[in-house]
Image 1 (spheres, helix red, strand yellow):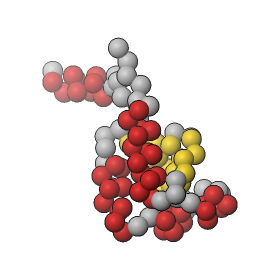
Image 2: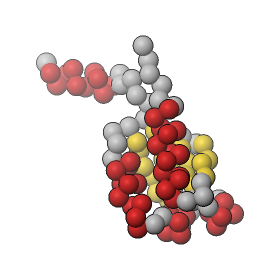
Image 3: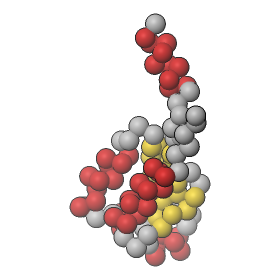
Length: 99
């Protein structure tokens, strides 16, 4: 009985999944050692799906600043710390809660 309740809760979750995509080269260039653990904590949140690609063919943007693609939306920042804050704020402010 309880197993089926958990399954139904998973299927009908009110929180929308967020897919965050990164370019490996961009991360290597801009991610600081100090920010790694904060990024990992964000990636382990239950509604965050993290994907890392060797290249996303955004070479001009990749050379200029840290960026991520959140549910298809390109997000950039001055620093990797600022990018993480933007991802967290976008993530928490844009969840669609069904009533």
